[in-house]
Length: 207
Ligand code: ADP
Ligand code: ZN
Image (cartoon, rainbow, N blue to C red; front, side):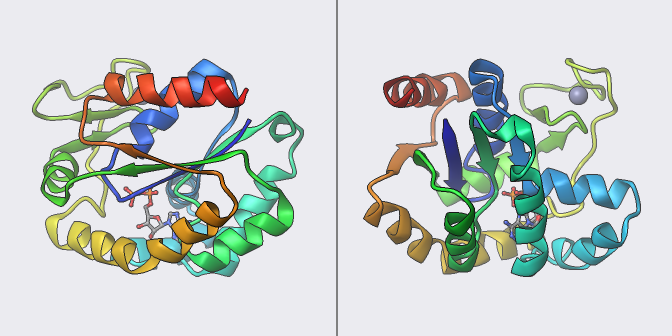
C-alpha cells in the first residue's frame, strides 16, 4: 500500500500518519521528521534545512527528493509506505512519480482557524507523538517518556507563512493526483478517531 498524505500544516497529517503506520505496518516517511532528526544530529543537511524551516519556507526540492529517494530504495518500502509531508511542490510530485507510482493520495482539509489553534497549542515528541495543551498538560510523552517540546516553526508568524506557502503550492499537486485517479479528499475538522475511521475504510478497500 503506497500512500501519500496531503494537507495543510495542522490539518492532522501527523496524527493520522501515526495511526496508519501502526495499523497497516508500513514505514512512516515524514520529511519534516527527517529534517528535525538531521538538525538534532547536527548534520550538514540539518544545518541547511533549518535555515529554511525556521522561516516557514520550503527546503529546496533537490535536497528533499534525495532524502526521499534514498529512503524509498530501502527494502522495507517494497510492500508499501506512507509519505507524510511529501510531495510539497509539483516538481516533488513529478520526481516521486519517476521513482514509484502510488495507490492513494489522501488529502486532509481543515478550516484555517482550527489549524491555527491546533498548531499554536501543539507539543511534539521525538517519537512522532503529538499533543495539544488543551487536552494534555503533562511535559513528558505518554508513549515513550520523552520530553515534549514546541517546534521552532510552531510560532504564530511562522505558522502563517507555512499556511500561505501551502495555499500557493497545493493546487497543481491535487490536480496531478486527481488526473491519476488516486486523489481522495477528507474533512480533517474532526477528531483524530473520526478521521481515522474514514481513512481505514478507504485503505481497506484498496488493500
Ligand atoms: P507541517 O506539515 O506541520 O508544516 P512538517 O514537519 O511536514 O510540518 O514540515 C516542517 C518543515 O520542514 C516545513 O515547513 C519545511 O520547511 C520542511 N519540509 C518538510 N517537508 C518538506 C518538503 N517535502 N519539501 C520542502 N520542505 C519540506
Ligand atoms: Zn514520545
